[in-house]
Image 1 (tube, protein in one colour):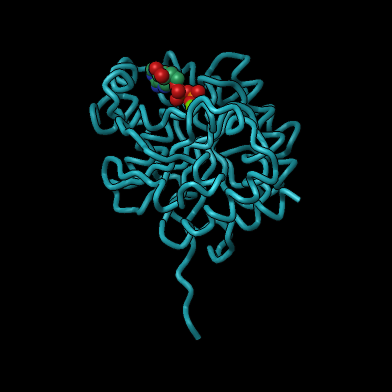
Image 2 (cartoon, protein in one colour; image 1 turned 90 degrees about the vertical axis):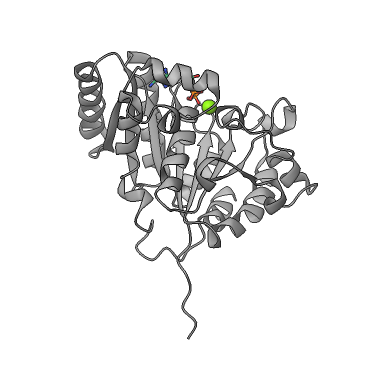
Length: 271
Ligand SMILES: Nc1ncnc2c1ncn2[C@@H]1O[C@H](COP(=O)(O)OP(=O)(O)O)[C@@H](O)[C@H]1O
Ligand SMILES: [Mg+2]
């Protein structure tokens, strides 16, 4: 009997509010995991508003829009980035990409499924809120990394995203990153509020993956288009992001077997 190699681990990175740091975290995690020897593909699913290519200093010729329309294959659209990671960009400015229908996603997920057998990790950077793509992937078994700020609006929207994810997949493997914390105690307090409400109303809570401080090194790294884990690896933010990279969802198969295609499950969830 042929032994099937395990399929890639798939982690969706999402938030309630925009601007919490999903793209900064996604690009840095992709670098960090690739540097540790994993075969990583980062998919910028903030379609129509993509910016992972900017944060990585890359200029893709093709993006998800070209893959959806059949103008490019998935493999043609992958761009090599730092540490050997691959980026599949999301496209900027085309109205249709920003608002994909379930039919567009069905076609797209069918193409993306082929990445699962040639990578160890597929990271998916979503737009703010849980759009159709994020919902389908969570229902299909993707792990979920929620990024929140410490302010009450970010926490409230982050909790709403978590609640929705639990509604879609009660057993979802979820982790929380508290980003842009003014101090570690402020970050801790935000986590305590989030976990208290989650435990009380949902009888579960995500794993706390890290408190990432507000750090000038991140702002500089965005300006320079080099992820902070590479440009300033000893900065407080880079060290906290490195803690996120040890989360078990990046190192263990999603369902114990790692033999189910999550993109295929997500296609089923779209129906
Ligand atoms: N830990 C941090 N410290 C300082 N600034 C940060 C940090 N994380 C993110 N930022 C800033 O926030 C901006 C928005 O982050 P981004 O990742 O694009 O958010 P999102 O993808 O959630 O919309 C970045 O351009 C960066 O300047
Ligand atoms: Mg973003």
